[in-house]
Amino acid sequence: DQLIASSEQQGMVFEGEEGEAAMEQVEQQAIDTLINEKVLVQQALAQGIEISDEDIESQLEETKASFPSEDEFEAALEQSGFTLDGYKDILSKDLLINTYLDGEIDEVNVTEDELTDYYDQYKAQYEAQMEGMSESDLEGQEIPPLPDFEEIKGDIEAQIRQQKEQQQVGETIQELVE
Image 1 (cartoon, rainbow, N blue to C red):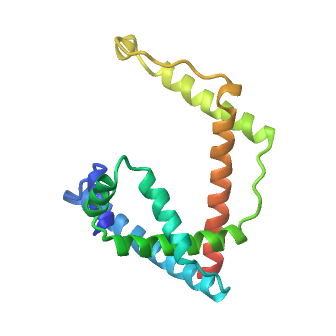
Image 2: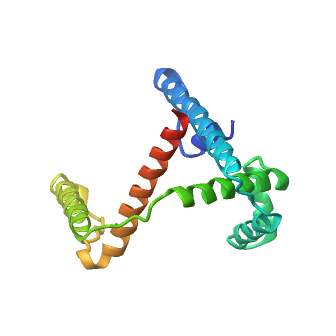
């Protein structure tokens, strides 16, 4: 239900034929997520990984600090349909899974060729998008120029690193599920 509510908040509509297909996709995604989490938690516990109350409280305080006030944090919890204890349970599970995955994921290296290839693809998309826009499309809009490679190199590296890590996570989960 929380995933459906979140999807609706993001503008997904679950009416009509397309809506039913989208609903089935969201439901399947929820099932897959639950299975993956269960498998990862079981594997982490089998390896003896434990999360202390102090770890949970530290993560909770870090989350609270991202809100302007305690009241706004509590309002966000309530709006999301969580109790504080329920949220702590989620934090505990997330910390357990992340600790396990940290031990399973290899160090990710990003090469200069990968960086330039990514930038070249980004540049080609930007140029194609600009070519596809007419004068009237551009009227009254301030279109930011294409950033130089060096300006966004760090962002590109972070993106590639994240993609590679996610690929390793997916492969790890796939191996465990099989």
